[in-house]
Image 1 (spheres, helix red, strand yellow):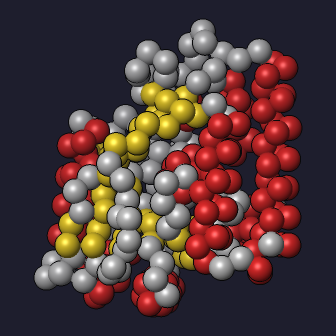
Image 2 (cartoon, rainbow, N blue to C red; image 1 turned 90 degrees about the horizontal axis):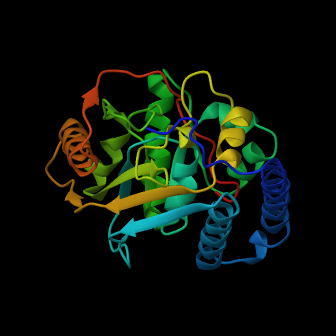
Length: 272
């Protein structure tokens, strides 16, 4: 497990990364504002992928992908992943531009919230069953528009050392639509191949603190593994939650705990 380590970037490099991230966020804002109204859906998705890949490069997050998303989604598709960091969304978007479900608080965040609200993120109010039902209706509408959906069933982030229990509520639309469910296993490693918890976004860590830790890392290795898809036809949402949790835990060789302190959702891509 990496928390401090000796392989850290010099202060000037950290400052350069910080400035470059701000510029990159602003470039996303202007592209969404000026050009997204002119783009068709395929071009918007390509723009999201490029923007996310560029952000990873700025932060020197080096992805390693195993498997791939469906080339053509000929039926409703749901990506289900474990949740470690706000980097998760960027990592996934660099290869598959799904519409993520995020906590409602994100909508109020400066710039990121605005971009998310204007580019397709579905927001959910935590702990409100009626609102969860409305979100599920929005997910079904997104399916009809040909969009794939991404969810983090843990409902919180973890350090990457174990999984928390997968909740089933957001998987109901997959059951209703007979969707294909794609489990995805994520983890972040240091240069020695150990879990890099500096990439995680948990507990009382603020976004600013998380960025500082990431800026300080010389290199973060990110692994994303697409596991065999699961056909939701004839299954219950709890069965889907259990099967995806088991598949991801096995792929990462991690135990499953009850509840860990974390974040209910990481910040979404600026170009979501």
